[in-house]
Length: 405
Image (cartoon, rainbow, N blue to C red; front, side, top):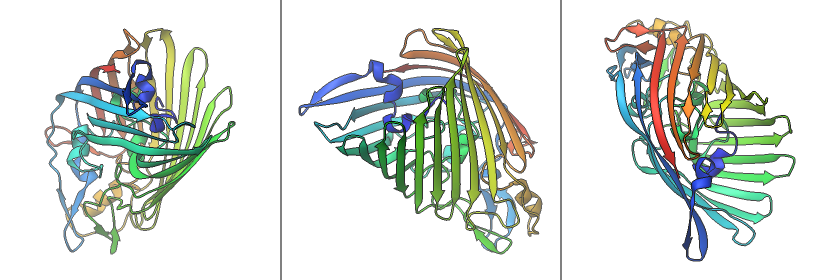
C-alpha cells in the first residue's frame, strides 16, 4: 500500500515534492511536479477477453463469442509514465488552490494487461495512453482544517493509478475492484486526532463506464459494466502512533457497496501494510443465482535492506464467491456464467491468490530502477495464452526505470 491515504489529495507531488520546482505566476507560488518512466514487460498469459465483456445477443442468448480479440503480445516496451502537473495549495492567505496533472501512462495489473484494460474501455474517462488530465481539482479552504475539493479526484485508498507512485510495477487484484478516479466533490476535515471526508461523484472510473452491454441473464437485465450515475464516499484516517489506520466506504447507486480497512506500521525491520476489502453488489448489478459479495486481503511488506535498496513484497487473496447455476441458452452459456462468480473481480468463481516481489534500486532520491516478478493463480481458467488455450494462472516479469521531478 505504497499510496497511503494522502496520495489522492497530493497526486504526483507526494512522490516528487523534494524535487519540485516553484514558479511565480500572477503573484502566486505554483509548484511544478511530474515524472517519466520507461518499462519492458513479459507475460505468459492475459485475461480471457470474454471474462471482461461476454457477448449476448438481443434475445439475451450467450453466443460464446467475445466482443474483444484474445490476441496479445507476450513482451512489450512501454513509456509507462509521462506526467506533468501544477499545484497551488489553499491556505489562510489564499483560500482557493488547485491541483492538475496531465499524463499518459500504462496500467498493468495482475489480472489483465494495460492493453486489455484500455481495449475493453474499462476506464470511462478514456484510454490511459491519451495525454489528458487524470487528476484535476480546485480546493476551497474557508477555515483552517476544512476544505472542499471539486473536479477529477482519486479514491483515498489502495494503489495509485500511475505506476511510479506505487511500490510495484503491476497493480494488485484489489485495485481492479476499486473505482480509482471519478469526477465529483469531496469535503475534508482535519480534526487533529483524525481526518474525515465525505464526497459525492457520478462515476467514470475503473469499471464505472456506460456499460458496454446489458446482459439478459435468467430473464433479468444485468448492467455488467456498472453504469454508475451516483456514488457516495466517506472515510476516516488516524495516526495512532504505532500504526496509521483508515476506514473507508464507497457506495454506488445500482452498483457496488465497497468497504475498506487499511493499516500501516513501521516494525523496524520492515514496513508493513494491510488492506481488507469487502464488496456487496446492489440488486441491479448482481448476477441472478450467484453470490452478491466478494472480499479480498492484501499484505505488503517492505523489509529494510539498504538506504537505496528496497525489496517490497505483495501477497493477495481474493474470494470472488460462487457463480450462478441458472440455465441459459447458447454455447456453454451456463458453464460460463457460473465461472464468473460474483463478478466483483475479474478473477472468476472461487478464490485467487497472488505473489509479487519488486527489487528496487534508487541511485538518487528522485530516480529508480526496478525488476518485478508477479504470479497469480485462479480457481477458474480466466486467462488465455497466445494460442487461445484457457489457463488458470498468469506470470509477469518486468523492468522499469524512472525519474521524478
